[in-house]
Length: 279
Ligand SMILES: [Fe+2]
Image (cartoon, rainbow, N blue to C red; front, side, top):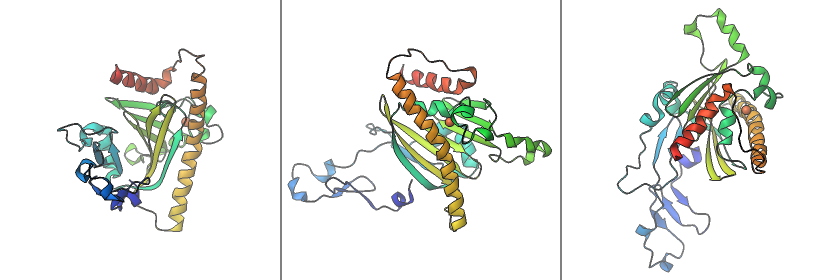
């Protein structure tokens, strides 16, 4: 949730300036007397299932059903991977940077590229490739959610220290993928999260947030996070550009089948889980 949204008292539609309270009730509209046939009680915003957890607002983009509790039970849904992130204090983390953009590719493509390291040495040869081992990851899952550990080459120095002193995140990236469309990259002292929303077969929208334990107050810490955000998006923009290119190739119809390699099994599992939901 953006700080500006957190302190907002009302939602105002940019089209005709109708104003809604935080509960979704219509508070007012210009020339309200023009709507004797549509009283305010019939013109509230649609309610969607929501909840707040891990520093983010979670929502299912559909209208609450009759008699349904609009409050999502995220503790159950996020499971043991959510418990990991809570343990590190995520419930109190705040968004230091947010980004939203249109992605000219199917919503599943960004997750394929973030659930394997096979492409790192080639797609990211000029950015992060040197930090990571080639084609290496460890992964487990909880239902359709996935946790992937990507060791950095610097992890070798931990051999000198007892396992109880090994820091989480300093020498690895840890990806938490919460089905169906939210990915959190845990980097120890901060996290980069994004959700991809489908818009059409070949179009999606990306909502991204960088979460930190507290808002930076000094110029030094502001610059520190700025550099982190730039380095994250430097690599991710390479993935998104390749995804758009892949989408345009799919559209040609030339390839009827695509194959995942053995180390890309997390991406293959994601596809199987999506298929399982819509079967
Ligand atoms: Fe990538």
